[in-house]
Length: 554
Image (tube, rainbow, N blue to C red; front, side, top):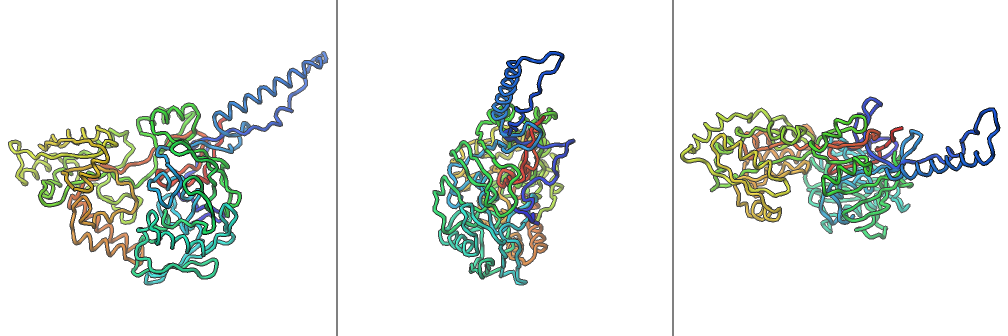
């Protein structure tokens, strides 16, 4: 549930806070108590010191303090007396080109703005569950067609304007009428209305069990209908932070919002720097330029993991699914279920994960652990080369007549994973050609034209199971039972029914070997030892920072 004193509960923040035995990391600028300069002691001894000696000592102390302040400032803001720092610097990877969250695609905007600068009626917690935000509570009718949200009292935007039900209705109306980003996620929405200043009522034409979760993202953000600002470079929200400075593709500085309706953030200033180059990012953490780095590859994180005196390295859960797509459409070798099953048995998932540093998880089906309907399906197709060979033989493929397939994927994933798959499939008699292409080529050939045998994509969206109930999607997978169960799950009026229906559908998809789920990517974060409260789960798409604090080492 939401914290009574603001923000959105523990939404996205790590639940186990660091103790002295297991601290976290992040960074902040060091604040210095200048009164320390006045505490120089008079020299003792049998003789009285000459006046100029005292002056020299005072000057020396002042110089030391000043240089200490400058040195601390170069590492970030903080307190030299062991207290919490007043700023922290975080290194991220994907940089926003502008701040217009209603019109610009890309998870970098969701990551930095949602929950920090802009808020919705509801939010997500660290387990990807819906929790209160601007709405302190809500009611859902028994038939699932009416949602009544009760707004918090005394909420204002950062410019001082009161946030009322009128702003909520206007924001949702604008979203739908202008088809802003993610407008299509509010399915079956029929009417949007207000009852007084503190109540918002949404009615649906048909139940939609994902509505609340959809409102935790861009579709549910509440904007000030009267505010005048340049959306690409400025922001007016109701969250715990303001945008103080923004440099496209480079950095963004967040400053505590003094008008925030809840408790003030633990760290007044958060600086986010973006690093496209992994080596530059690692060097920034080593040098103290940043105190948190997310994500960091498991191999690159190893030196920090070993240096427990200075750093903490932790891994959080995510919804990224590395999908080995198989073309299920007629006319392709992978339209044969036996071929698809053989491929799944041939793949050694443990080997793939180990080669990436061993932090990712095996995923046996299309739903990750943080999404509704998850079931552990990893035992359906364990690595078994003999079974793979037997199935290929049943499908008509032998050493004399081998199965030849092409794996097409974008060069953003590197060549190693393709090399591993080629080697693993070769062991069972599949001749795999690996075709690494530009992302634009992949979009055209695979996603649009569906001209491929096998593909590889990191599908990172949460709650995206509906791709398996869409026969027009690039998988070419068409199963009426999956479509029926998915529809029943999405139109359920309670979560238990929704989850059960989606789990049934997901099991069928996995049993059909419609694809292979190579791994569930998990996010590794490396931090300075003094950081607490940095979100670990889903931090590439949802990064609430109000709970982050940094205490520099003494």
